[in-house]
Image 1 (cartoon, rainbow, N blue to C red):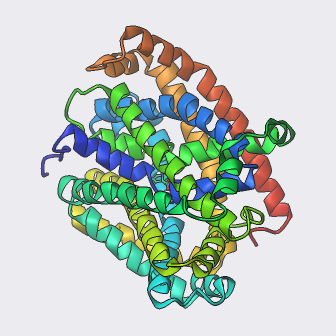
Image 2 (image 1 turned 90 degrees about the vertical axis):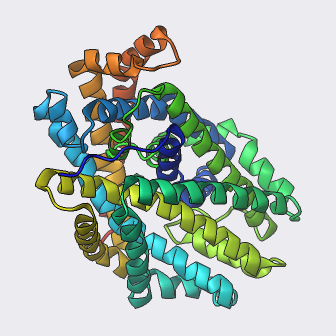
Length: 444
Ligand code: PHE
């Protein structure tokens, strides 16, 4: 079998991991989750969740990946804990299901790029969303998005993933900064910033039970945790740089991109009617923004730039979602990498047909993964590293670490206690939310 690839440099790893983290979650769902959950009050809880729970969890995946030097299932065996392999397996399965609907949304983005050029959504944004979000157009766009994803992954870890993200991440940041600067000139900008940035803690107190799980779910999603993605990416490290330092860089850059997206979206929303109604269902963001682009001067160019950012963000994440099952199947069964990428991508395309036929199925896939499978995976990862493989984990985190021994000690303690408790609460609230949605007929 061919030798396992490794990233060409430390920056290569960071770009790829940032690429996975920065996605639809940052630019599409973050501003709208914030809007739906009362603005700045949500932001505070979200930032706490990212740094206090997300960052330590990312280090869990890094430690397993770098020490295992295998795909996320085989890594556990290599570490001497074969009975824990299913923990990585849950992540492989979640990546598979997530990509099936993530690619459908990626297809929407493609349709909005076309619509920005032709002006098709300017007249009636609601009707345009209806036409492209489900049915033949959605299926065709889903196929194109999936084909691009397969193409990149088939090229391999360095020639495909590393190279693509090294181009896309800087492009995303430059375009977003440009858009945020442009947004300062809008009429509603001040009202938008104030909603975004001045927390109203009475909202937080009133809606604590819904804000906390939303913020936690968003933190895991945006950092790509619980999908074995970071295990897979860290397995290509082949070098002993400081994991806490790399992890902080990734978390900070990812947070900056999300915050920047807020500085673009809130002024736009407030310039054209406020954040009201921004929180209902997967389509609202597209409809609200498309409506705004239709109403603003130079909206066509701004819209195009915005949806190109969204496309790059989606692709740099979708390749990480495909990498996980591809790495597992090609290494486990000894198939070639590009053949596996094509075969796996095709199967995922088929699984994505259902969400491409109805957004209710998209919500179903989304909820099963994010409110159920993801917290279970993170819980198991924390228990594994905190209690079963704690010595190996401490040793691995210490290798090349620039953060000192006491950081490693505190991290382990945190992973043993705080992380599992926080995740169990999230899991409980998530399952409750699924049950409520089921009863309300949201899925079927
Ligand atoms: N982090 C990505 C986003 O914010 C989504 C993602 C989740 C990607 C899990 C890979 C794995 O959109």
